[in-house]
Length: 212
Image (cartoon, rainbow, N blue to C red; front, side):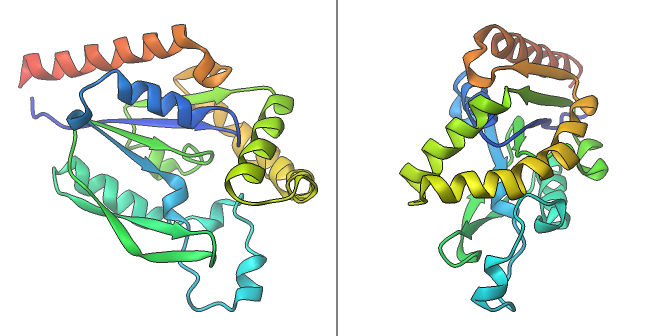
């Protein structure tokens, strides 16, 4: 049996704690054996658009993502080829000229709120996870993050949540829960679920080793 990396998809609404779940999984394995591809890094480049047009981008819609590039990168990692992960520059609302080199790893985590929305991506995953957290907790986390890390006002975060984030979540994110193999309530706070995930990943790695 040929050895190949294990692909894990971690989805969930904005502020659900999916990034924390991905981070906790990484901490359970040697640093050199896990790589994370954040879907946020794969927003489409908007160089051809004016700043006014860029500001109108709905970043919570599936069309905002360059899934073709993400799929290409995942397929390269599956073939043990290194990739150049893009960096998205939120200050100018387009892709940066800088990149992050990513080497093939035993475990590849794909993390993002719409990571389970594209069937092509789902078909590449060995384990699909949905982090399920109550909406009131998610909006509070989003307010804290965007005001402290992105210089936003509380009112602007609330307006965006009500007008864009919430309706997009109901339309595109919540329905992907049915594709999940594992649903983790309360995100990174659910240590029992994370431990079970880590145990499952280790068992898959060991089974591959035993046949390689």
